[in-house]
Length: 104
Image (cartoon, rainbow, N blue to C red; front, side, top):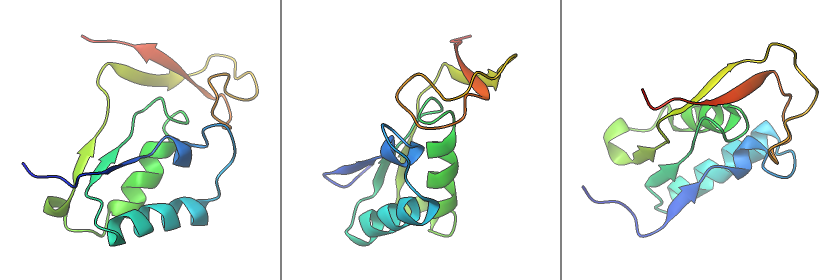
């Protein structure tokens, strides 16, 4: 398996520390791809799934064998029983899901 020397860390497009608009998130992924980046890293916990959704949408029309996508295992998202406003893990997203560790 060959990947680019550098990768794209997708936590920021999951609104890490501040809100990133849909168009800016897409432009960042497009720019990385156009610059030759072929390794994209995300996780369910990045923005309570927002990073994965945005990255998936941005890469959907690219040839699947042209990039490597990495994510994390054992990190699930489940509906929050009582949504409590904004996420408390540094991501500017609604807290309508909660993080669960499950390595089963």
